Image (cartoon, rainbow, N blue to C red; front, side, top):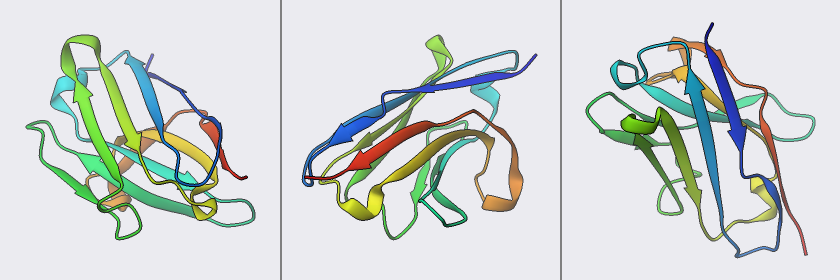
Length: 118
C-alpha cells in the first residue's frame, strides 16, 4: 500500500534551518507530482510547495526564497529544505502525493512537527 513517512522535524531557533524528508513506497514515485502542506496550531491546512515529475517547482508566497523542495527519484524520497525559519513556520508538515495544485492531493503522511522558537 501507499506509504508516506516524514522525518526531520524538531525544535529550531528563529533564523535556523531544517531539512524535512519523506520516504515513500507503494506507488510509482517518479511519475507523480509531490507536495508539502502544513498545519499551524489551531489553523487549517496550508499548501506550501510542490514539485512535478520533471522537477518543476512552485511555492506559496510564505515559502518563496526560504524553502526549497526537491526529490530523489532513485530513493523515492521527497525533501523540503527550510531556511531562515520564523515562529510563523511552526506546525505539522505533511508530505503529500499529488498536490501540484492544492485540490489534487491524493493522500498525505502522518506529518512531522516543526517548532520555531527561541
